Length: 211
Image (cartoon, rainbow, N blue to C red; front, top):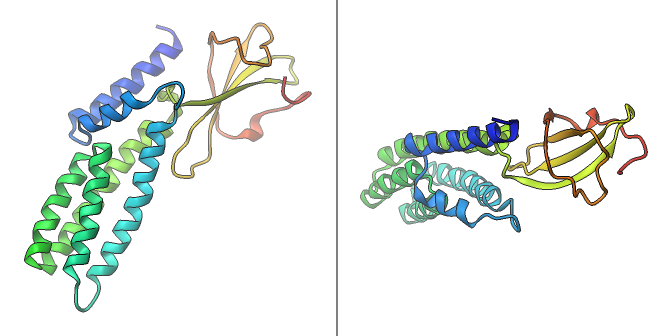
């Protein structure tokens, strides 16, 4: 099995483990089906928005429950929004916790609402970590190519450098791919033989800039 196939296999295996462990449901599979070559960053964008919305909602919930007189209608609205957001990406454990949370909002049970918030944070952080591993570890995410270009290094070697989409503001990583012949400017050479993860753009040594 070549390196690209191994990377794809690792990605699929890890993704499947998230379904087996109950972190994701079929909604996430539907998101993956919507992603294609014309929009390779679709799923990452959706997940990134989920992260951003979730952080805001958790902060809003914490602030609302700290009030001397809790507005349970507002708390319920936040939880309802969280439930919809988590359902949209298939984060089933987060969604289920939201269902329990809303029941205690109806009862106006402050203590149980506070406990639900803590559990909701744990479930959210767990799925965030899992999805972060799935998409931020570019060594197992070969489907998330954003763009490619060629560079000529000072050692005379030519590389195809592929930029990978990275969610939630994390620095982007790069792969460099050594070829035995020069790559065309339009990146027409697509057969890959060797990948090396480069963690920082500073690792690149330019000689003549872009090829």
